[in-house]
Image 1 (cartoon, helix red, strand yellow):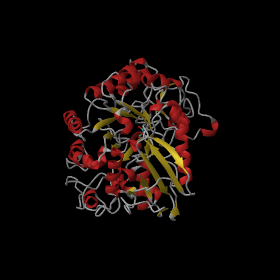
Image 2 (cartoon, rainbow, N blue to C red; image 1 turned 90 degrees about the horizontal axis):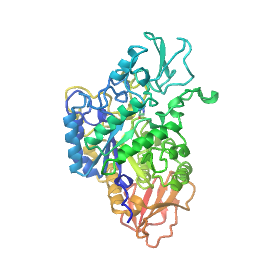
Image 3 (cartoon, rainbow, N blue to C red; image 1 turned 180 degrees about the vertical axis):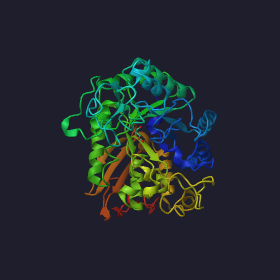
Image 4 (cartoon, rainbow, N blue to C red; image 1 turned 135 degrees about the vertical axis):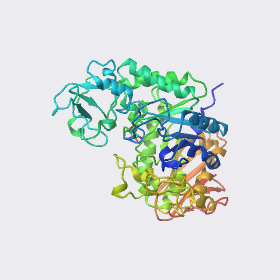
Length: 512
Ligand code: NOJ
């Protein structure tokens, strides 16, 4: 007997950026109580798992991706006891909980770094990368992700320390076994509390060439965080995988492998002994054209299928402009939802995309992010009131997205033609269709500007055909299915009726 496929192959994961989801305390910053408050909504929507971006104690130089304690909750967001209740309530609703894990770097305020920095002979000196040099000459040419060099000179001890992101985010030295043991302890801490898995930040960064050689001259301006790709990371991932697989219940390791090469990303699945899932970002950066998407999907099929790696799909997250903004229209956002939720793999929905939110316009005076990502992190408007359902008291930490008086959860829930209902219908359709959840993927002939594919369930009894019109023109698209019925239309037109043979502008269809 073969084991049933683990839950994360058929799940739809919903990413929550806690600061922006819902504030219950009244300080203008979202919190765990706010998330708890919306679990009924998430259940109604029909997602299977939530991924929480960091909620750990942090000085917030990178809004939580600078962790000063890996095993607690920042008081801004709540308490560990509240976290436990949240996990419990999720599990009671059959929602899995995935937490973010930030192993590449800590905060410079983490006690480990404070100790490490205290002197050259500190017992934790080697927990981070300290190198000799002179104040005007860093140890190598690596660039940091948000600009500038990846090294900061420490006056007190006259050495450089390494940080692939902000100076407030010193890189942990994974070459030191004590660091690995300490970080594995943090995984166990959350696994013991019942989390269902981790989204692992910059996971391809942890293994380094011990000599820290220069980046090649032609790419020396490219941040090292999107180039580091070393065998040692695979060794550490095999250790991490063993640790996670030792827990019952198919806990999942999802890696943020920010290498814009699908071939390289595939290597981080190892021989089914490293990551269970990895993000693959080239599709996220693809323009909204059928050609570009066909190429990105083909690359995934070519690289992932031969090693039985299960793909992931993501259109929006907390690091990039929302796809509603990038693609430029509501109709395209509707069509993109059909694409995201019908490709072969595990889809990730970024909170607010089900409302069709655009990025907020952030005046210079309100900008807070060193990486210029405030727009996509705007707070979620839950209703049409001035505070949009957030606890009154203070303003939210960032401006609201455009049209929040009318584009908010409550208003869209009153409108069956809204994008919110499209997401909901798509999630229902996935649940009801083995072909969509776990079936094979095959391209179908289609006119330029249209992507057509078929999903077939492993036992051949269930099948769906998906047609996506990336253009503003109607296209005749013949299909070979007898009596094809429109199960879902991105514009809601003709659902339940026979397919007429033509795709409307910007329309996407699921046919059965
Ligand atoms: C990737 C995270 O998604 C991003 O928000 C963060 O700034 C960097 N890693 C550094 O942790």
